[in-house]
Image 1 (cartoon, rainbow, N blue to C red):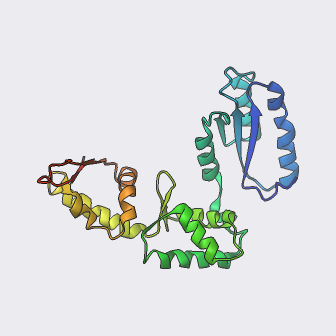
Image 2 (cartoon, rainbow, N blue to C red; image 1 turned 180 degrees about the horizontal axis):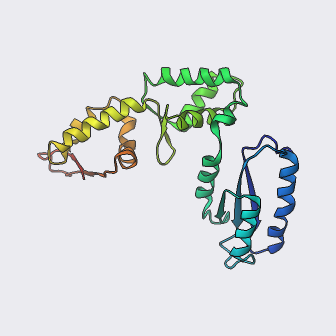
Image 3 (cartoon, helix red, strand yellow; image 1 turned 120 degrees about the horizontal axis):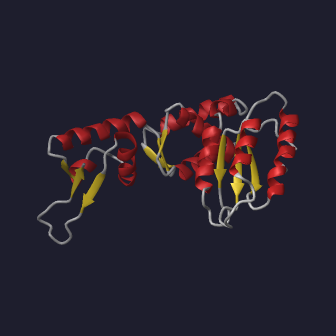
Length: 242
């Protein structure tokens, strides 16, 4: 079993079967033997919460977590998907991306960074899946894990940004922030109302429009609401920023 290069250790047990919880000591010992003094974040997962009830008291889980220094405990249901998204976010957040990047080809990381910088002059926002595909196509020999690690490293350094739903990558955060600042500034001078056509004139790329509400909520704590006036074409569509 190869565990010495793992960034995060995830220990999973079935909350309806106590023997699976008791077996965690064995698996934790295997991790310790394999890794030696190399530390890693440990995440504990209690699965099958959809079944109802638990054969493992929460006090036992707390004691075990304290004993082996668990960083976070999650409860999930693989059957209905409950808690899975939170678990994946927790794993992603526990990864030391800068350290992981060191295990890859440093030249590739730098080259991809230059590639993103060049691409940002053409497109300010790109779908994450499309960006990964284009990088894999242009950098033969790289794999998706390596590309994701490099992207997450640049995200952690605020060189690029990611949307709340993780679907879009902002390739030029400074450009986007300036445009949003102009929109908010103009809206504040118009009692919070700005025409949609005027708002769109601030941006040269249409894909930003579908990301706009997420960006506002995430970075400025304001909400955007679009009103469409149907067949009455005398009234223009407008954006109200509250």
